[in-house]
Length: 525
Image (tube, rainbow, N blue to C red; front, top):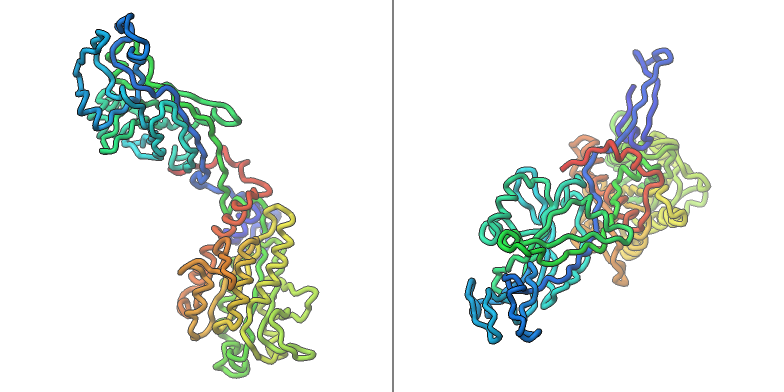
C-alpha cells in the first residue's frame, strides 16, 4: 500500500487493501492507527500563600523570663526570618545581648521588622543539578504573604513526570553557605525532587534562608477543585540544633489549575477538516497565455509556476480534507458571458458550486478556463479574502473545531487594494482562517512583506491590529530550483501553530480528543 502521513493522521485509523504489482492482493488489507508521541505542552497555574513566616529567637521560648512584659518576650522562632543590612550591623551573629527584662539568649536579627518573603521553585534534574522553575515576587513586611498566582509549563515543572519531586529551597551555592546539611541531602539522591524555598529578601542581594520543603506535581494537584495543600517550611540547621523546633512557617497551595494545550494533531485527529481554497491571479500583467513568455502559458510538458505552486501546496493540504473537494477562484479577469471584471469568480464557472474534485480537478479547471478569459486587472485580493472569511465566519457558530480554512493566493504582482486587504486580513484574524500568498514571477514583492507581519504587527487603515498572525508570504522564485516539498514546507510552516492559536485562544477543544491515547503517550523530557 502507499499513503501519506497526512492521510494517516487526518483519519487516525486508515485501512487499505494490500497491492501486489499494482493489483489487489486477494482480500488482504492493512490498518494503520495514528498516535501522537510528544512532550507535554500543558501548563499549570499555581497560587501560594504562607502563614507565620515570623521572626523569633532561636532559643527555647521556655527560658524567657516570666516577669518580662508580654510585648518584650521573644516570639516563637519561625523559619524564614530575614535580616536587613542595618539590623545586621546592630545585632551580629551569635551575639548575646542582655535585655532589660533579664533575658539572655540569641535574639532574632529581625526583631524590629517583619520579613520580606519570596518563594523559589527548583526542579531537580536527573543528574542531581537544580533548575529554577519560578521565582515569585517579594511581599514586603509580611509574615503571612499571599503571592500572585503564576503559570508554568508542566514540561518545565516536572518533564511530564507527575511524581518528579519539586524542591522549594536555595541554589546549590546557597546550600553550601547557608544550609550545608541540606546540600548533603540534595546530593544524596534528590534528583526527582521539586524543591521549594522561602527567602527573606535583602536589598544587598544576600537574602536570608527561611526554610524549604519538597513536593511533587502529583502532590500539588491535590489543590485542584477548591482544595488546599500545605507544607511545613523547614530549616534543617535549626531543626538539628533545637529540640523543640517545629517549623519556620506553613506554605499553602491554594490553587492548582491545569490548562490543557492541544496540539495541531490533536485537532486534526479529533476530526477538524482543512478547507483548502485557491485563488489565481488572472490580471494582464501575467502576459497573454498564448505567448510562451506568459506566466500562464501552458507548456505541453512543463508546468508553469502557477501550477507548480498550486500542486506543491495543494497536495499537502488535500490529505487533511476528507472529501477532497476544493473551491477554486480567479480574480482580475473579464469573464463570460458579459465579460465584466470579477475578483472572485469560480474558475469552473459554476458559482453555485465552485468546488473541484481534488487538486487534479483544480488543475483541469484552471487549464480549461484560460482560453475563455480576458486577462485584465487590477490586482485586488480583498474580495476573495472576504469571500472565504464569510464561510469561516459561519463556522464560528458551531463553537467546535470542525473546519479550518486555508486560502492560497497565487499572484504575479503587488496588490492594488492594500488598504482593503489589510482591513480584510484584520477581520479574518478573528476567524478559523489562514492566508498563504505565493508571489509568482520576478516582480518586486517588497510591499507584500507588510502583510506577512514578520516585520511588525499588521494593522487596518483605522489602526486596529490583527488578533493573530495569519498571513504567510513566499516568493516562488526563492524555490524555483528546489523540490516541491521545500516550497510546501516553507509555505505551510506556520499553519499548525495558527490552527492551535485560534482554537486555544477561543478555548475550543478538539471534537474527539486524543486523550484516549494518554496512557500510552511518551512524554519527552
